[in-house]
Amino acid sequence: QEIVARSQYLGKLKRRMLPARLSAADVVAGMEVFSETAPEQPCGMIVNAERGVDGDIDCLVEIKIAEAADAVIHLGAADGPALRFLPLPYAMPE
Image (tube, rainbow, N blue to C red; front, side, top):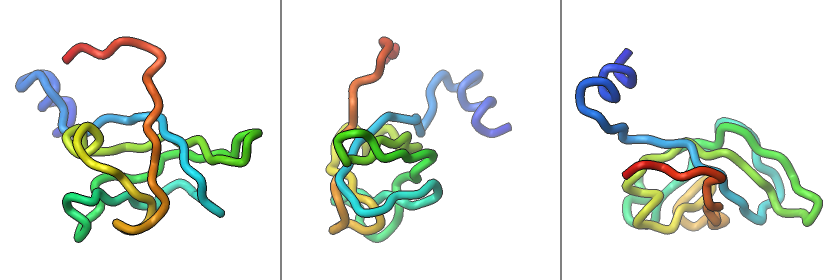
């Protein structure tokens, strides 16, 4: 309810799902991601992950919009493997 209300009445959301890629041994849904700017608490979570043909892991990440835009994001801890966010296949309004 809170997410729907925020999008209807305030016109913006705090979180977004973004595609990302990373090099790691194992990634599963539910793993937390951390920002270098605020390493003490997670800023998002892996929603889905699958190993690609090149050996890297492609995943969907639910993350705070502000953190995704401004910080380097890591899997599991602030010093874990870094995520590389991929461009969306569609345009997003600002």
